[in-house]
Amino acid sequence: MMIAKNIVLMGFMGSGKTSLAQLLHVRYGLVVQSTDKLIEANERMSINEIFEKKGESYFRQCEHRVVQQLAHERGIVIDCGGGIVLNPANITALKASGMIFFLDANEDILYDRLKHQTDRPLLRTPDPLTTIRQLLTQRRPLYLAAADAVIDANDPSLEPALDQILRFIQ
Ligand code: S3P
Image (cartoon, rainbow, N blue to C red; front, side):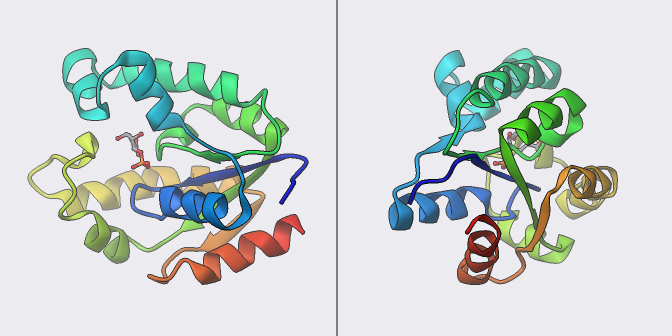
């Protein structure tokens, strides 16, 4: 499949961005770029290590640089880290490059998907469910404002979300 602009996948950790991006790659041959993977490659450190050794604000700077680079590309899928939405300049750049899809899932489903994961530094707290709720309260309005389309990402199968995305780009 050829697409003129980018498919930009946004949403909270655990909303299925990476899995959907993989499906778009495997099924339709679309090139995928992940902001987190590019940051890890540039820094030669895992996301956990970057947060530990350099702190979140350093990570956000790396993230912004990667976004600026990716926003020059066309016809690809961009798998965005969940915090991309915190910087309005990221949104401006990504919106100009393509269509922003917000994968919207509720907090209990997100918690269920994330509770055994160890690679989310922001959720290494005594009470991750409360942390998820707090972050969502702050971010959900930002995702909604940024989105060209809101995709229901509650279903464990990726097919309904994929169908919704395809309907928008075809
Ligand atoms: C973050 C989300 C993570 C990663 C980092 C920070 C966030 O990406 O960028 O741990 O602030 O929500 P995923 O959304 O792919 O988990």
